[in-house]
Image (cartoon, rainbow, N blue to C red; front, side, top):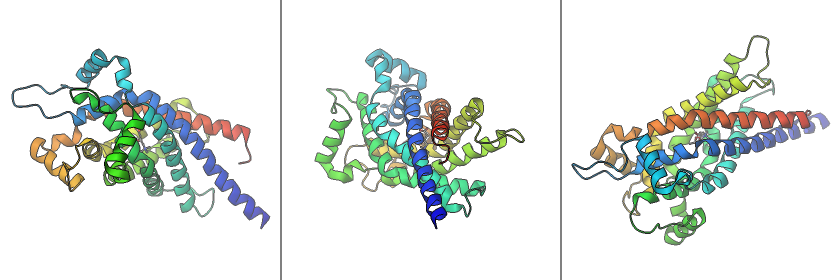
Length: 307
Ligand SMILES: CC(=O)O[C@H](CC(=O)[O-])C[N+](C)(C)C
């Protein structure tokens, strides 16, 4: 009885470690990935140019150049406070959800999960994160696309966006894009964690231990996890960014209308807008994330070896 109680409290404390180390991973992700994230959202949401005119940005490099010239380097870090405040807890919840998803599928703590089970655990993490991800993305995207409009900026910062959205449309407006976020993050998080765990396993040398931190292996597995996450996430991400930044009433049937409108106006290419900055960001941002996570876990395991 006493042993059983000890085992279950170890279980929960293990999840708390996942939660905290995931938060550190999130901070590392934002610092490394924010400039390319800003470029991605600007490319995804720039208005279609009138016939015969060039678009606002002709590509990733052009967008980076114009942003720096007009707004300085800090322009690339626009909306950064929202991801730091939102992404840190989101990654914490995400790694917690993945840890829980793994535990729920194990009959014994030492059981090795199949790739499918790892995917399921990641997908559960994707469901968990939506409550934080949706408003965080809504606020971040609205700040990131402010430069498209002429005239004085509508929003002063993340808190101002949240206040104005709430005033204009209540909690529904803050959570606009929830289905699109789920559509993106359930499969993407499944891919993310499955890829990371699989690469860690196959790259661990014979007789070595998965828990022995190898910086190179962690950076590679984390970077590739980010790449595979985004391979499945880009089309729903385009729908999400467009829905979350559209004027009220533009898409009354939500992502179905965004999809139909994009197909009619731009064809299937629209679904892959922003691919270059997404992929340029995916590897370093997620390599940094998993390194931050693993180093923090290692520190916890050193300080509290019995948990
Ligand atoms: C959309 C997103 O936040 O993806 C994360 C990876 C990244 O590049 O930020 C992965 N995950 C949703 C699993 C946290």
